[in-house]
Image (tube, rainbow over all chains, first blue to last red):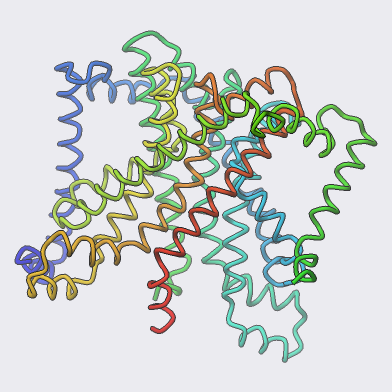
Length: 269
Length: 258
């Protein structure tokens, strides 16, 4: 307890210094992790694990590897096409279900059954229905990414202040105008949270489809290809690609979180 | 009661009937009629001596054991580690960036590591599921344990409540709403990872059935697999929600009065 009091005291005297200390601890944590990884790899403590330096060198090499970059671009393109399409599908459906209770009630059973189906189970079916594979990939991304957006839109619309909608209605605005001027803006923070959740789902689906298809590009295909290699080299390739996948996830997540905070600052205030 | 049920469910039989008519009219191999899928499922999976056939038992059971077992391991590990990290203020600053990175890795991307290590079999599924779903649990447990009301803990300390009881009676309950939010995400994620890891690195399981059906262009088989996974997903989610409701009743009660 004394330590928390000391921390609070230090924070009060100079917040920037406390922040610097925090960043230092972050950096120390990462450095210790890398050091342990390096030692575990070098000494053969974990026999299959390539050393951190070997793996990170491969991470850097991959940045100049045209085959890898093409695969990375292919995955990101599918995600970047699929996510906006999912927004275009899910937000209007969510607004409809959220504002017209009759429709919500009659479709609820269907939503409740479709939603728990693990989306990757649809990959083989989608590959029969959509050709070439890129279409199947985008179709599955749209399907899977739509759910969190739809559900969050629905919650957001339900959360709208009824006084605001009633006020607009009593001033003679039509229901379209009410949705456009009140429901949509006040549901927007919820919708954006849904989009952020959906973004990580797009990557899950893209990589999974690429695993199943194999030869059709994408970092999933690159990973599967790497994992069929021989011995230690295979592991270096797989781990280096994994680090890239993590970096991509981190960048996407951070950008969306920043955007969310900036766009909806009024809500947190 | 019946009227409500009819009002809520009428669309389901209508859609199934439309699908049936469309499938019969088109006679496309890709779109088998629901009755055809149902009879396929009955013949292959549900006509055994004790309802389930041998094929069903040999594939449903391993999938179920893997997904439930691995999820439980991830829950225990994630909550234990998370609460420990969250309660030790200096420690969380050191591990934060690592946990953030771990969560940012798209979970299926871990699969090839275990394909290289184990090639095939249950180990691949277990490792993929555990390492895939542990992150949201870990992150939420850290967050929940970090934000326990210090006044309650200090009061307990003053009254000499032993550490074990403080953990069980104060820290875990007050972190539980956060922890359950992470668990809810992890249930559906575990199922996704079970399917994809069985599609790529297994010789049994529901995902394996899907991949053989796909290789044989067995369309009713593919649809049947999706139906079974849908039912499994629905069942696991409902069980989880039931448990959550039971554990968190006090929390919702407290929020309502607040």
